[in-house]
Length: 63
Image 1: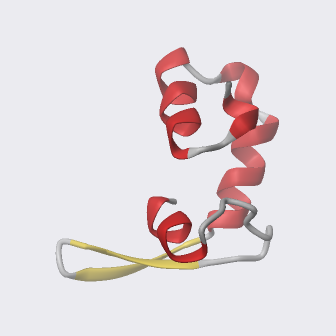
Image 2 (image 1 turned 90 degrees about the vertical axis):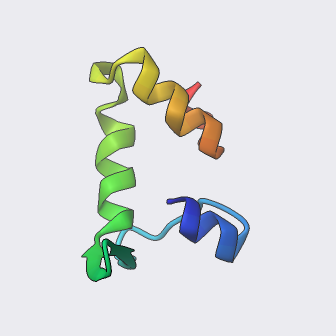
């Protein structure tokens, strides 16, 4: 998510957007839009520390 925000300057991610990330020299495709949509709809079940991490990235719905 931080990679997307650094590149695009915002976190208004389309639901169909996929992001390629590199972890330990391996590329992985992440369905970022689906992740954010699902997380937002289930935010009531998230732990406070997870919500705070999302808020720190700039997601206003996580506050």
